[in-house]
Every structure is written in structure tokens, then in C-alpha cells.
Image (cartoon, rainbow over all chains, first blue to last red):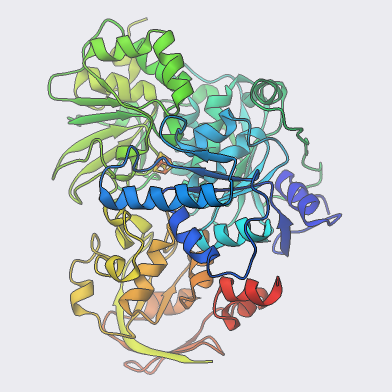
Length: 422
Length: 164
Ligand code: SF4
């Protein structure tokens, strides 16, 4: 029986010639990731293990991104715990303030994730690296500890769903609209335990930033991972960012899929997820009058350079509506610098937005943009659960950078076509 | 192995990790501190009303969202003896096993059991008995490798036993 792309990567890392859905395997890991929230728990666990240090100091990445620069004493203690661990074990990929970025934007940029890798991270959006043709999935802190200690992890080989993307995306359609459309179609548990395998000629029209956004939100459909074929754009990205060798895996022609969907990218409209689940999607022409209080443009989903370029193209020469706090958060130092050099930061500031140092910040309701009771935010982040960005009576509308920027200008949930007349 | 006995707190579908333990409390990893805020954003009364050994019953996709192990830790530290759901989100499922919080998938039980019912759960057989109604349900047993991890008392001990 043929294997999917995910199954082939897992088989190779388990030293097996083939695997099938449901099989339990132990796989060798190329990278183990943790952040400032999950790593302290993992460090506590690894200290209970009878192991001598970590499996490979070059294959562990610790990124301080959620609450840094530290927002309070407790988060400072957390970072200190990780910093000391990184120092003690001479972890080469420890990224603190000044070098850090939001982990899932940072690791590909640093060249630490490449095609064919098996990566676990104690963060649910670890699935992002599937954009490069890697198998990557989120785990908890104890799994992270075991991974750091042994360089291995247990997996149940996932079954798969195939998404064939066809055609050229319609105007203003980004990776975010595509993945929100998919989650709206299959639901927040539509891919539970499964791999989401993206194929089709439409992929060639998608930038790597679009693909990172799509793979990033596989978890919002319950998926174990999301994965893209390794085409010329992916190879070019890896050539520019990484010195590590990569391996290209392709699905067998007779691979088995539990379900198949075809999505005509040319027929999509800008899509928004209404509170309080990413599956509550509406297209922009169905949203009605939704006045807003805040806009957030950032996160591991949409804090990359193209996201900022799109937002800036809408905000250029315009002002954000009075009373709409507009917060722009470049995802990494490199993206921040690039946005500065391209003049995007000036555009944001002149439009009346604020620009923050890289951080997860408001995405998970940590700080830097917490919502009060009954406030509404249009956000380019990935979750709109109850209380995710603040008060339990606040609301989050998930959207693309284009919709977020347009909404900032009009003061209500709006599509880019409402603002930019072409 | 052991059994769980307790009263039911019942919730709906897609109970996410942000309502199990809101991110505003994630600057702590102390289980007792986490437990004090367990389920706060979905049920403010939960911590006040529950007693040691009580059982959570919920619909599909319990524990969806973030990978935070703080979620099962908070539930376990609050004194919950077992979570029964139609299905669990996969990272929550893994985390629960790894930290030793018993969880059982059983769509029939998740649908039929009512809030406040008194349950007995037998972890050896996966049988769930509703003592209030007299009905019983067969929950899904753990795959063997997960059973091995549980038998060792969690992943840390499992590794200590197998790797060293
Ligand atoms: S940006 Fe948001 S979703 Fe991404 S890692 Fe940070 S908190 Fe998690």
C-alpha cells in the first residue's frame, strides 16, 4: 500500500521501509523546540529523568517569545530558568531578547527546519514547518523533556486528508483566507489526529509566507500536521536560509487518503472567523456591521514580511479610524529590520498604528493589547477562543492582514476592496 | 489498577485549553496555583463546587488548542479523577497520559451521562458505570504502549526504566 508524504518521512525516521496509519513507531528527532511557557515545565521533568544531559545540544531550540521582554516577575523567573538550563547544557539555539522572534517564524528563518525533518515542539503551532516539507507537530512539555533527553519520540502514524488547491488565488486572497476557508469547511476537529496534505497547481501561486500561514493553522482543524510538497520556491527558501542538507519526500501515487477536498483558489473571497471558534467562518460580503476597538497584525500566523507589506499597502497614506488601537508586531528581529528598511514601519506609525518588538503578546492574551469587556478585535492571529485575548466577554475576529488593515481604517470589519479602490 | 468514583461536571464540545487554564495564569507552572483557576472561564463555580475525585464529562475535541501541559496539570491538581469525552484533541490526550491524568474516550457515555450523576470508572476494563441511572458503558482501552507508560506512572518513569 502506498504511503503519504508524512508517512514516508516517519518511516525513514523510524528506520522502517514502510508504515501505515495507526501504527505506533518510535522516530528519531531532528529538532526539539520549546518556548518560555512550556520549557520550564519540560526542564523540571528532564531533571527528574536519570539521563546525562541532552541528546544533542545543536538539535534543541529554546525560544523566549511569549512574555518577553518579561511582563512581570513570574515570567522573568521562567525565562531565567530556561536561560540557566541553556547555559548549563550549552544549547546552541537559545534565543533570548535581542535575537528572539516568534518561534515558528524564527526557526525557518534561522535555517533550523528543512524538508524531510521530524520536529517536535512544545507548542501547538509547531506544525508550521510543514510548509517546507517537514513533519512537525506540537507536543506537551513532558514529551519535549523526553525528546531533549533521548532524541526520540513516540508517534501514532496518522491517516491523511488530501487538499488539492487549484488555480490562481483571487485578488487579496492570502494563505490566511485559504486556511480559514478550509477550517470553516471541515470544522475544528475535521482533521483530528490526521495529517493535512496540500497538493495541486494552486500551490505554485502561493508564497512561502502563505504556506507557513496555512501549515501553521493545521492544528486549528485538529490536525497532527500540515505538509506541502517541496517545490522550487521551497528549495529557494531553504537555499537562502539554511546550510543543512534536506531530503525531499513525495507521496506515492497510490497513497491512501481518508478524504479529499478540492479548493478553487480563484473562487475564494476574503474570509473571517467569528467568535469563538476558528470554524465560524463567513466571507467578507456576509459579515454585516461589526464595529471594532482593536486590530492586531502579527503572530506566528501572520507576522511575516509579506503580511506587513500587505497591511502597509492598505495603510499607506491613510489613517486608522479614531478609537481603533492598531498594534503591529513583526514576528522576528530580521522581519522588523526589513520592515524598517522598506519604510513599512514609517507607514504604520504615520497611519496611527503602534509597532512592537517581536513577541506573542496579545495573541494569547499575555500582554500588549488585552481586551476589556465587550471589546472587539480583528486579529491576524490563529485562535478566537473565549477569553483568548483578554476578558471572557471580549470578541476576536480572525482575518488576513489585508482585512485587518482595512478594518483598522474603517473602524469596522471590512474587506480591502472597501478601502482600496482599484 | 484503580477505579475512580465521583460526581459529574458536564461540559459541551470543543472545550479548549484557554478555558481550562487561561493564558493569563501561565506565568506559573505550580500545579496548585494552576488548579485554583481550573475551568475558570467556562465555569466560575467549578473549583468551589467540586470535591476530590469528581469526574469531568464532555463532548468532542476536549482540550483543543494550545499544547500547554498546564491544562491537564490543572485538572489533575484540582483533584479530578478522570475525564471522559467523546473525543480528545491529540496533544491534550498525549499530555494527559504523560502526566498520569486518566482519560477515557466513550461517545455513548459522553452523550448519556448527566451533570451531577455519580460514576464509577474501572481503569482496568474501561467500564464506566453511572450509579445514578444504573447504566454502564464500555470506554476505549489504551493502546498497549500507552498502557506501559501509565503502568510506569508516566513518561518520566517510563524513560527512567527503559532508556537507562
Ligand atoms: S504567536 Fe500566538 S499562536 Fe503563535 S506561538 Fe505565539 S502565542 Fe502561540
